[in-house]
Image 1 (spheres, rainbow, N blue to C red):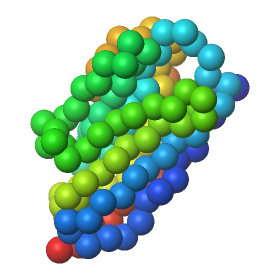
Image 2 (cartoon, rainbow, N blue to C red):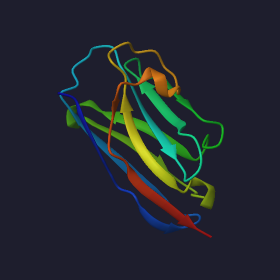
Image 3 (cartoon, helix red, strand yellow):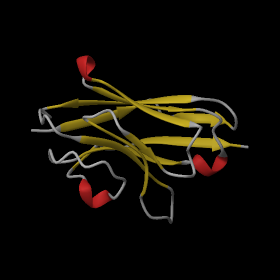
Image 4 (tube, one colour):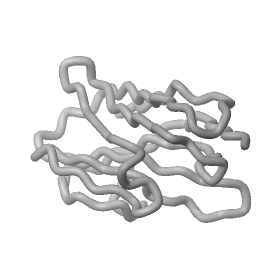
Length: 124
């Protein structure tokens, strides 16, 4: 059974940094894509960043240059380093994993496994 557990969210002032973590278990595909999504109140879920087994990454335009996705396979942990946070980054952040296909993308329908989310609130 695949499980994804996020942590690291919080309430911060604009301009500071946060690092989100997602510990995954039961996920043993050799080809994969792992990603971070976010959803703000009243808005659709948005793909933020993704990484696949080749180490390739992709980012939403709104976070390029500020956010970095990384993966520590030894720790079964996915990270999202978020710098220069803005109030517009306020959302629930979710970790997601695909069902072993490995295509790099930010469309939510790629992903079959989801965590429960961690809240990030950025005040001005």
